[in-house]
Length: 350
Image (cartoon, rainbow, N blue to C red; front, top):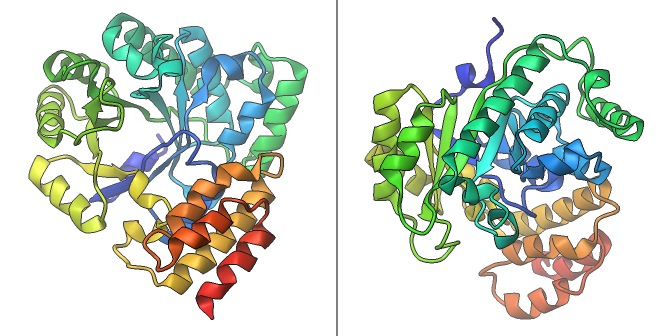
């Protein structure tokens, strides 16, 4: 059987965490080229939207081969839609499938998706089973034309597969690794019950954010709870365990891996404006401004129909802590093009 990305994943594992509205194609590509993280996740994509022919969502599943191993993250509540979306992601050439069981956003968790699944292990189990069925469907030859999708969606998928560098010759029909990203609990830590359940699901990997849904992103990530979850999972399975939350440097990542016995960590917010974080490199002001301009140009190229305003959060991160950043930030928050970004940042390199 052909090997999967897990067979070649070197430790320590320091990967890029999925972040909604952040880890889009330009951000992932820049991070991969500069920082070379161990693995990369897409931002989450609605399985119901994909199964209902929402062509616009396919932009979230665009990637460059430099990102490999790259994992498609899916979210939702309908098992059958998960099965369909899993086959779609497999046909697009992803290296693995990840189920989001950790998003704390109200619009997601209130309908029972994301971290809402922590309180519904029965549905979580059905979703995991559906994804495994979708992976098996793909491995045993299910074709795009076999999926219950409209012709327009199938056409868009074929086009995207080609853009991703996927062809009939290089697409390997095998069972891809299935993983879950989650939190330590809903309104309280639920380490024993939740991770005992997940440990029995025969998952390739579990990534754990050290906060409850109720905490959102406030307070401190509970790494003691992550360590306890890791012990529970390892006692019952050979599943890889990654920790996530409040790690700002490569040095901290290595310390946490050793202290809590996890197989690796995922870095999220620390990577904004700093793709060098995976290398432990402290970039110069010139490196940061040059990269900000390159990132802006790539954003325009890959996401031309997306409002430039969504890119501004990255600009603020690139110039963070630079002398005079407040005035410069005010100017950058008004930019509407990569050309304007380059003009406003040019003064820093003089």
